[in-house]
Image (cartoon, rainbow, N blue to C red; front, side):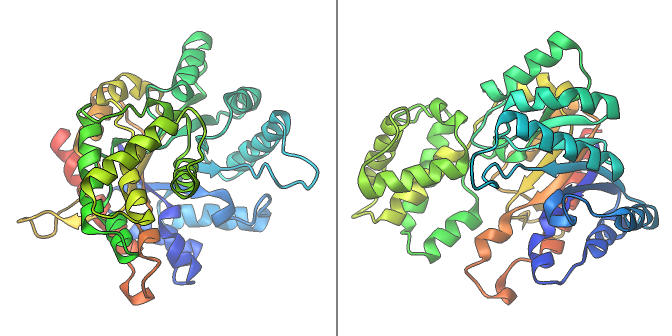
Amino acid sequence: MKLGVSLYSYQQSQFFKELTLEQQIKEVGENLPYADGIEIVDEMSLRYPDPGEEFISQWFDWMEKYNTRPVTMDVAMDVLQFRTHVMSHEECAERLKRDIKLAKRLGFSNVRVLSTCPFEVMKMALPLAEKLDIRLGKEVHQPMRLEGKQVTEIIEFVEQTGTQHMGIVPDFGIFGFKPSEVILAQYQRRGASAESTAASEELAELLRINKAPFDVKELIKHTAGNIRAAFKQFIQSGVCEGDILPIFESIKSFTDQLVQSPKEIDYIVVSEAILLSNTSLDTMRELAKHVVSVHGKFNYMSELPGHPGQYHEASIDYEGALKALADGGFTGYINSEYEGQRYFQDRTRAEMMSEVDQVRRHHEMLRRSLAIQS
């Protein structure tokens, strides 16, 4: 497997004007041994939708200067950009086609669409992707599972047609087995009780071993953001869509049993447990040949107890996920994607985590883990 970085990891440093785009690329090329892959979010790193020929020339100069290579360009669709209507699937496909052409101009071999991108849109853009030799990959993001329809419809289509230009981009967040320590710590700073954070971890474990008082399979067709918004509305008003109402009612009951006089935020922190995918490592092994690239999601790299200078992501099963990919024959890129900075944004700049340091720690873990498996 090859190593890279999604420059999304450096979003905070870019916002505070601490790292320019060139400096982000330089960090990957010069300070992360054995890493050369660059993944970008187009609208974050570029003057979108057309960065201009001068920038494109500069882009390739950077790739050569820092011995890096473009791997995956992440694209999105602002379907509400028009005042008169929501974009149709046909309009979304035209936007995706334009993004595919941009990715080709910048030397990328993959284009990642969001987990919410309709499969029909991907199919309409596929002929152009095949013509330009660009692989389209749908992000598989928690609470999605590898066993869900969003994945199976792609796999079935690929196997029926034989196309080599469509697949999936697993986000390692789907292998999380408990809420991240930094998420729980932020909830406590916002007023959640220690009882509720402990209850969240207990519920996560019950879900992992299939002993929870409810089934969360209905949630795999919803995004994490929508689930959070819907649960907050439920706690405030009791109103909720029918298919997930029983789940929300069970979470409330579970919290009432374990937390004394729970507040709204206590219910919310317990509900974090249902955002874990609990997807199957066996399925990852089986689908490895369909993986375009991987989002090496992490929220916090802490030092391994008793092992100075070695780090781990204590809430994600990296060892199992990496082994499943290796056993399945995956040889593409794992691109680090740090998202934990958002859980420190209630603190001062001096207290926020260093994104550069966090990514370096992540790569220490990846190099060590992959060497063990080689």
